[in-house]
Structure formats: structure tokens, C-alpha cells
Length: 317
Image (cartoon, rainbow, N blue to C red; front, side, top):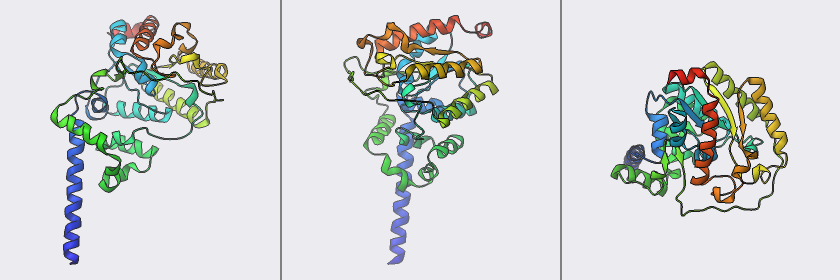
């Protein structure tokens, strides 16, 4: 009886490992959309992008890579990830540079309203599961969430987090089917269908500040960039209402970011004061531009960036 139980458990465990393996292989087979973006970062070797955009979903939805490339004549990739903190951005940059050619430029979007948060969290963290064979990535993720080693080795721990959404993504990969939003992503830039709209809501602004931990990670990003001869640019992209709807002390935060940029000899662009982006028709919701807004912003920023690029970058192209 005991032997039968042990045999049954072994068979069940083997089935779980096989199922999980097939699930992850299918996810990695996606040729468009969010998982192809992760394939580009964590699976491929030796990418040679000149420019990486870093930040949260606001970076992901605001930097239109195709437009940027056409104006600057550079090759860019949008590494923005929904909900990414400064720490996660640092993790992503280190992981990227570990297996790809170091970019010439990194453009980091900083959100005023998230600077006070010290919470180390990964939005949609099961998205990383199919890529945990990447040992460097796994070690970095485990530094944010100590469950990641267990997620890698233990299917009983990881599979409960990969429900129908991930099974659907895997089937799309196996069957080479394009998902609804997959075609709306290009080189990491994500937009929404024109017929979908979020809401511009009245929200209560908060008092924000740069936490000690987030300041340390900003400094770490700056140090890493200098060490690897990456030209780092800080930016805050447009926010509906100029950011005053989100934070009470915007001017103080802008001054602090300007000071960080000044003492480190790097540029900081504050697009929240630009009156060109006050029109609600440019926004998907309070914090995200729609495609029209993203194109308008990307055109404006790309021209500024191109005009201020060091001549060495231009001559190297």
C-alpha cells in the first residue's frame, strides 16, 4: 500500500514537471506581445540596441520606439514593465547588460507618486517563471522576492499562480496564434486599441518624497551607468493635470530630481509642465497617454534628445 502511494506521488510529480515544462515552452514560443518582449530580454543573446527605455507602464506606453528610431536614427527598445519600481528597473538593466551588448543610452522614466514607496514588489510576477533558467535573472529576482528559487524548483509552488491566462498564452505560442493585444506591441512599446478607453478620474493627491531606499537605487543606476559608459537620462513623462492631481509637493520633487541630475552631470527632462499635453483627448487614463498622445510626446522628446545627443554618438552611427 505504501509503495503504491509513493509510486502515485512520483507519477503525479513527474506529470506536474512535464506539464509545467510544456506550459513554459509554449509561452516562450510567442512571437509577439509581452512574452516576446521577455524573450527579447531574457532569452536572446547579444542584442545591440543603442537605447533602452526603463520605467513602469508609463514608460512602456509613452516611448514609441518606431517614431524615436526614425527621428534619432538609433535602434531603441522599450524595457518598461508595468508596476516596475526603481529597484526592478535596476534589476532589469543589470540582467540585460549581463547577456547583451551594453547600450549607449538608458532613458529612465521616474514617477513622482511612486518615489515614496519602499515596497519591493513585482507586478504579474508569474510572467518571469518561464525565464528562470536564466541564473542571473533568477538570482536578481530572488533578491526582490525570496520565493523565486522555490518557484523555479517546486511546481507545487509555481503552478497555482499560472492559471488560465498563462495556459492561454502557452496555447497561443504552441499554435502560433496572435492574441488581442500582441500586435499592439512593437519593440517593447505597448499601446491600447483605439476603441478602448480608461477613465480620467478625480483623485486625491498625496504628499510624496524620495525614500532613502529609492534614492539609493537611483544612485546605483547612475553608478552602474557611469561604470559601463552608458549615458543616462532621467525624465518624467506627461501626466494628466501635470502631476498636481497625483502629488501635493510636485515642485519640491522636481527640484530634488533636478539636483540629482545636476550633481551627477546627467540631463533631467520634466514633461509634466508642458502645456502641449494638457488635453484629456491625449490620455488613456490619468497616468497613461493613448496612442495619439504617445506619438505626440515621442515626437517632441525624440527631437530634443537628438538635438542634444553627443556628437560621438552621431558619428558612430
